[in-house]
Length: 190
Image 1 (cartoon, rainbow, N blue to C red):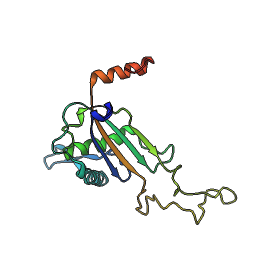
Image 2: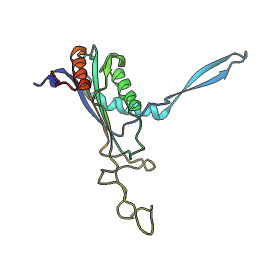
Image 3: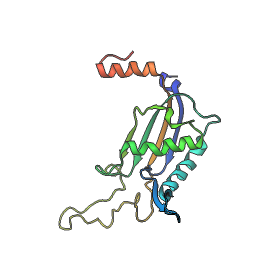
Image 4: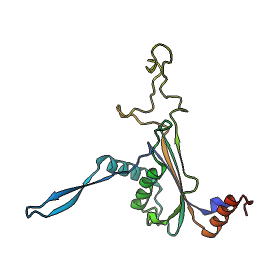
């Protein structure tokens, strides 16, 4: 067993387009009959749906006891994004972190000390099902026989290649600091 495998605590792949939870809560101000003001939260339906979908995908992987102590999380987000249209990686972290806590996989998302190795991968330019455009006289129009069958926001189709992979490792502060120092200083790994 390699050193990385020995430190691995959890590994799961959830199929579906990775979502973000940015602006998931909307606060509005209301006025009481006596004239005083108060704030209330309006739930965001798409965010709640994304949470439920990911929770459903994670349930088969929930361990008998939550992971305790500091951890290093590695997320791989594969989605139907074109270059320049990808969501921020930091916004993509929020959903799986919150859902892992809600599902009981981790005690608290503050346990995550590092996101080393996390990536987002946009598939649209590599996907064999992506839209093909006419280049010559009808520039910008689709070729009628070669349309994308994998992803359409308007039609509700999901990209069959999209997924989120979550891997959790035990965070060893001393060993990780040595590794980081070696990378920064160009020293060989110990």
